[in-house]
Image 1 (spheres, rainbow, N blue to C red):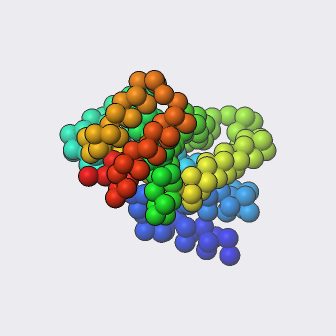
Image 2: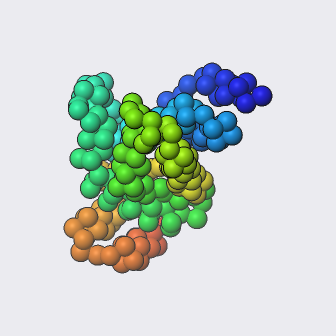
Image 3: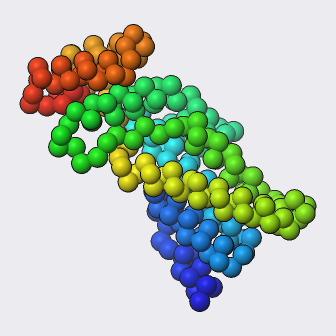
Length: 221
């Protein structure tokens, strides 16, 4: 029965979607635990790492206003560390935009969810940890024959899956574009980016902007 289940997981139609990849990783981890199979564990870690890389690509798409040229995409693929390096460069900008977007979405009573502010530092740590399972295991005493190596791998996938589930079940990845913000919201944004105001002060000022422009939330045209 387990072999049939494993086969059905591996033969799923593949998707370029971070949530799909993380679900795939978790399903493989469940089967690895049930069968105590190291190969399935490695596949699960590989898919979890793929999920993080796919998420970085999705974030980069948001930063580039929802589209990425083929030239930029190829540049990311050709770099030594690929999307890891690209997301590292974009991290400061993303952190500011994601937090500001989340604050704006808090003011929209009709919003079905909150904006996700992904912790890129945590994602990078998880990616590096998964990478240790995605290369040759070398000596079996430190890997395949070590129960801790196996249990740590399962825990790693579980941590990654729980983090994705926690974020994605409560919010959505979205970024307000500074160029689309209203003049009033832009002023608040500029003070926020310059760290002249705290998040609490930012939220208060956005509430004031909202009262002045009751027909839309900050950032809408």
